Length: 93
Image (cartoon, rainbow, N blue to C red; front, side):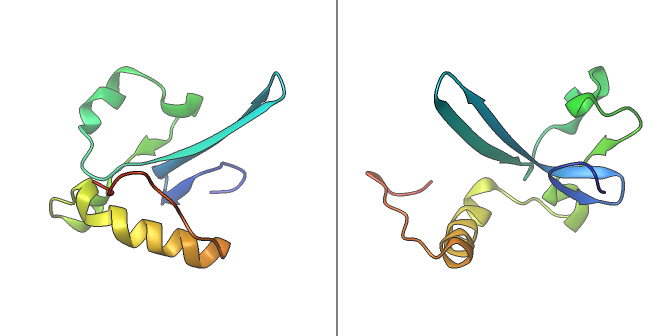
């Protein structure tokens, strides 16, 4: 929920998005929880956000969702949204 970054469902974060700038270098990335062991988040305050939870695609859909199941659709959508062509030296997965 605004003003928090990432992808949310209710009060639970499904995907973290980050950008870091320093020493003339910009890094960015995301972490999409597919089939993450969410029990680890019980020991920390995820993203420093008190009272907010963390979830995964597997939990939300009620079935196991492996990274390999979402990788190609994600890459396809990324190319479409950002109007680019992704190049890799190896096959995804």
